[in-house]
Image 1 (cartoon, each protein chain N blue to C red):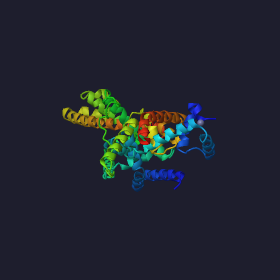
Image 2 (tube, each protein chain N blue to C red; image 1 turned 180 degrees about the vertical axis):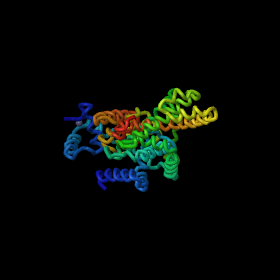
Image 3 (tube, rainbow over the protein chains, first blue to last red; image 1 turned 120 degrees about the vertical axis):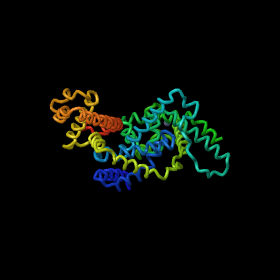
Image 4 (cartoon, rainbow over the protein chains, first blue to last red; image 1 turned 90 degrees about the vertical axis):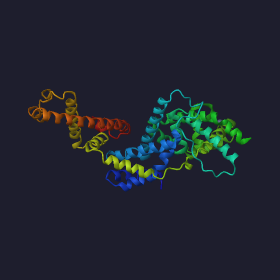
Length: 198
Length: 188
Ligand SMILES: [Zn+2]
């Protein structure tokens, strides 16, 4: 299915939900459940909260069915709701634990991703876990908007115009956000690559 | 010209690295990068970061199996909300003007106002009364009816509190709606 057709399909499904077709909502949920949960998970790095917020996202989608108009791409609209909820949650968390430094210790309430243990030995597994932890922390330390932009660009594979649509800013602002974010990440994670090439 | 000579141009290397540029631009950069060591360095660093970020693989995240069931339970529970919460919601989230919506908003606002006045002045119906016949009737029937009115007011107060909660929840949607172009035509 082409990108344009996929967009069209989502909007059509949502319009059918508006007409009371719950099966179309189930289809939308099937298509976007994983991307939404993964996006929120990468933003806040806590699976339970990610699922909770994702539930809220789909609840809001369902609630908006009566007034839905396909003025923007469905995914842009969906991720706008998702990003808004995630950033709100992050803001509330920050208010709650404003004294704790993100750099000095792992944030409260974040549980590391549970990785299936299929690695050949314990040492390799530990190295991998440590690397992953560093990557997670570097992403988590980015300013919120940069983190959202990177998550959409790198992991949701959205283009600049779509990210701009979600973040409600210009494409050049998105480029600038991404440029700064990747620059920071490169500095923070440079030693990982040195470790690999040695 | 080398993109690395200015920050604005260096941004293009991100797109080059993600292979999202138009084919002719890609080809032009391919030719330049082949001869330019600072571009090569920049690209190598970005590619290394790219592959490091690949390790943060959320695909291994196990979504809890009852995710959908919980969601549908919440949707169903919302469907059981009192009619006025649902009506208020549909008024607030609306993107299209519908004839009954302003009337419904007025009716709900009216109900809330009357109830609030009852809570604040439970015994002084006459200050409330102008243009409100049912209230005037209550005052004529003495204390027992007044008690009943108080009870109603308490119930109304509780309902207003729930309404407030629903409103807080919907405030965000309204903001979102305004941003997305959904719901702009229906500000109170
Ligand atoms: Zn160059």
